[in-house]
Length: 470
Ligand code: DUC
Ligand code: ZN
Ligand code: ZN
Image (cartoon, rainbow, N blue to C red; front, side, top):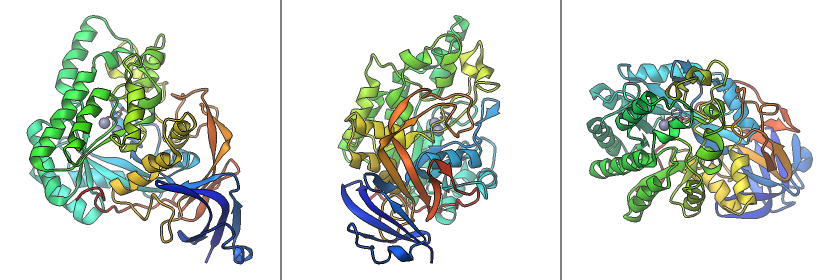
């Protein structure tokens, strides 16, 4: 049996921190002890990692990625191999990607296509949510099969992108009723797509073609209204609801109200909505702002969305931070929207930087160390049926472990990142803190600033039901 000892680190959980040692046996955590507790077995270990002065935490779980997603006439530029490698560099040891059923396609065919992209290509473990792009009787039957037999217990619908992924309210209600009967989680892209399409056409007619119009034609009200409508539909269907990539503080207010009345409604945000803005990034001169086109869009800093999102993270009104990792290169991809912002592929890539960027929230006093672990590791695992296999340092859990050095720094940018992108939304940012060592199911994948993992090591995760539902 292969044994690894990590000793003398500060062990972090969502509820506290303590000095201690972690003994890893093959793929799982065998035991956790006080400092020195395993000193007698240290000589029998295959590897000993000194974590003195460093944090030891569960591997990050990014529950919202889009590897190779076809979008706007192109496809997200990270494969499962490049994207999962980049994730590992950044201390993320599990991803949940979105398999896609487009309108007119069979759900099982869409799922099979996603398995084919991922199998044998991942460095870290991976699971799938299923995008249902055509709610009909067959799709509803498939939701049942996927929940009961395939380990896919969460389904994403879109109130945006008419003609591509969009579901109308009747379809949404039917899917929610099905999810309710299964105990599955509904995930919602909450933006009023048909109304946005009108605003986009009117803007283009006025000659407003620059990237910043992407945000101006997707006003806060379109996210707020759709979020409220989704919550009301979920209430009627008695379904749990997880709103993805929230950027508008008014939309989160709707989640707060639902949670205050006891509803199973959850909100997710992403680093781009915490750090980037309409004024400073999307409005950069010329076509530079295209790098920051994503949906929901970046919001105005003057209106205070970013500060409000940090506050909602502190109060647990927002439960999870994922990346919505959906990378496109500027060359040949974002460039599709030169002269017409509506043709810019939507997405920002940051699967490599989520843990570091959130740790900045600890450094600047926005969140505690414990909350960092909670929103990036533990809650994602519990929310999507991976706990306690993932998301916690505990005997019997998978040995997905990050040793994090708070005294080192990370320079973010194209020259140093491992994502398949020719730009970075965080170019030039210097982060206090650095991913030191990463283990995925007991295998060291990052060490001494070197990748030691293996494409194909990552396994498919069959997930259970969310553990936040009564
Ligand atoms: N938003 C994005 O930014 N990209 C892909 C899909 C989405 O909803
Ligand atoms: Zn979305
Ligand atoms: Zn997404």
